[in-house]
Image (cartoon, rainbow, N blue to C red; front, side):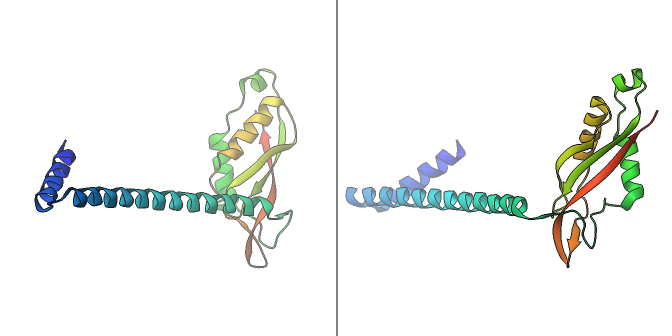
Length: 166
């Protein structure tokens, strides 16, 4: 309502100074051109941002995944922090408890160059619900400190054993 009132005042103030209908038509043409220009600029910025995001994803997926590097990726806070995270976040599945299933699930994933985790899968299975819980807990991990090779941040394959013991 307030915006409409201000627009009304601005238009009426403008029209008081304008005498011919040609000038009024020109004024509206200029306003429409400005609207189009602003809209086109906004669309161009959105397209550029989308293209840049796509380049980042493509560049990460096209990079080589290393098995071993000079500096391996590390969980933030090191191994003690990772063990604490796993102990806090793993929920032993009920069906595995009922059947008294224990074991070591080997989870394999890629630590991306930005520290995020991707391509999580089980390399050594134990029991379906234990496997699923191991994948779940790895997927909710915070970003890692990425690995480095020759001073450059790189994607690194990582194997993590997760032991389920009652």
